[in-house]
Length: 441
Ligand code: SAH
Ligand code: SF4
Ligand code: F3S
Image 1 (cartoon, rainbow, N blue to C red):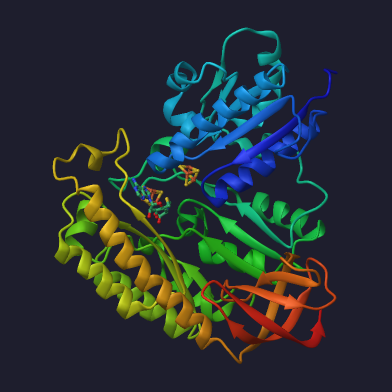
Image 2 (tube, rainbow, N blue to C red):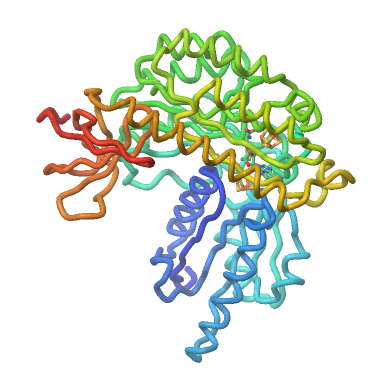
């Protein structure tokens, strides 16, 4: 048995990284090490990185610099530094060259070996590297889930991406699409429910591309929904190309499935969608949304948008605004296009100037914010349940989520995991206030 180490993990990027960070923590704890808060002294610091946009990828370098400087200022030895996640995979040894303090570099498909890699780094000089994408996926080598789970817990069911959108690094950082077997997903779901989860969020880069012989994603949803104790089910991120008739039907037929869907469209211009290799048109997206809403009339939609993709004209951008006006989103994320090394779009000569991207992003975000606020106001008066997740900002307040994914603040004597019935009584741009009816389960 090696000496136990205190470790902390800082995660950047998407929900899949949040899930991976939990699993890395469980792996280190199972090896005898002890988790500490991010700002507490630690022997090992793990940075679980994101490579999606330049700003996200650069963040790890300044964070490592700060950790090293702080240790030096206190006259302490610096902690062992682990870089995990998508930037680790994409930059590999280059990362160690730019940040010589790094001791371990481990990719998103190899982190089940983290305890062993940390052990090796303690005794060997130089950086320990593991960017393997093993044929046998990491999941079966990870320890069981922790005995306590959040009321709303993530569960990765699908990894990787084969779609190769021309702007995106994910197919390179996460590898090929792979679906976990139904039995494995159900076993992990049962463990999370036994540990206190009441809502599960099934995760994948293209979660609705999940498929196993004889079962499609709708089949998986039905199987998970049938588990005792599961009150709510969500999934993210879905790709418009993989919204099948059976998945649309699931939104009508599976009561646990929440009426909220994150379905990124990226752009409303067919010319740009083609150049992005999204392999669907704006009309396809509108039609998919119409079908989903026919199946589940109160479905709230969310999307991701990229502005300033190479070659995007004012007219293309206006097509995006028009699509947003027409569809109506309850929530959305929007980004300036960021050229990523190794992706086809980065090499195009017709890059859009930063000032133009900024101006377009401002206009799009103003519209999306107005839609979100309008959606929140339109929900006033609805009597619904909130799944309580954590204490609110003020004493006696709790926050949780409505079925439509909104943050709702409730003042009552509650605890995490409670499903409290409320009347939505006040609406702000980003959250609502719920007045409890007295029913809690
Ligand atoms: N698999 C998901 C998206 C994962 S990445 C899908 O296909 O929808 C999350 C979001 O980051 C994307 O939806 C996109 O809007 C944004 N994004 C990805 N690459 C980007 C880039 N190079 N510049 C700006 N935004 C980007
Ligand atoms: Fe990236 Fe496109 Fe794959 Fe989504 S579908 S992860 S945007 S390549
Ligand atoms: Fe970022 Fe990797 Fe997720 S690049 S968005 S952490 S899949």
